[in-house]
Length: 153
Image (cartoon, rainbow, N blue to C red; front, side, top):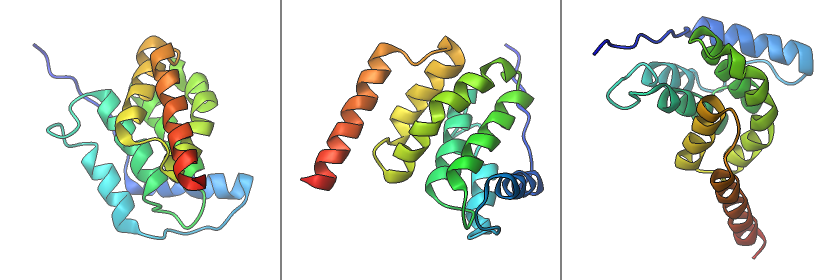
């Protein structure tokens, strides 16, 4: 069985993308915690923890979104860097769908309504099924409702 080779990008590319997003859409420039960004980019290269592409992409999106490496624009940067990761690994055909579907997901991940395992299911559906499956949609709805109930209850 052949080993699959994944393509990665470095911290300098991640910072350039973030700066471009801030220039185009507004917000504050700067890195809040460079270690968080370095960690996210290093961890996705660890095949023991993240053996499959879905694992890697989910962790990249989650870590940038949730752990706030940047001063501002973490959700936007998480989406942009994830779509670049899709493109450089042969999943360019998924980018439009990914961007469209992940805008709301990014907010729910940042808020804590969607945990990493559910995010992984969402990413799986988007890149391998080219839609979010009904079971996953139901799990998203349940997670968001439970989160809202805890917040307002």
